[in-house]
Image (cartoon, rainbow, N blue to C red):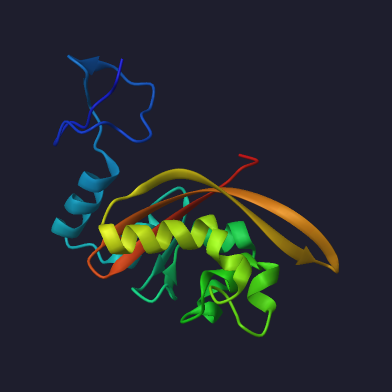
Amino acid sequence: MIKKCFYCAGVLDKPKLIATIGGIANELCTKCKLHFAFLQGLTLQEFIDKQVVAIIVLDGNGTLQTVNEMARELFNKDLYLFKGEAPGRVFECEYAQLPEGCGQTVHCSGCAIRIAITETFASGEPVFKMRATLKTVKQGEPQEICYYISTRKRGDSIILQIEDSAE
């Protein structure tokens, strides 16, 4: 049975195992949670810090504006140092280290993270749990890392949610 948001009756993007009445769950979808958080006077930073998934907030140019505690834990670094940087630097993408930089190399045209951010910003349509595989170099060794990403547009910002594929 499809579970729906208590407020808008939209399909829940990540339903929990909870009881429903006529398919309506006692839970809000992410869009309504954001809506009510802003109505309650929470700042964006306060709201994302309360989330239990890693979140990076980007501006319309695709540069990092802020992060939550879960993102700092996932990447095990002080992401505030990356404010104004492109996401490839945060994810340690090997192509972001090239002279052209993140988003500017021939390899970037197929980047799932870049595509999701760009399409969500242009259309306003969210992306849910897109698989993103990146090539990184850690301690001199090439690696592939996989994440599941979701994007949502809020005003002039993109909220990028990251889930480690190992979870």
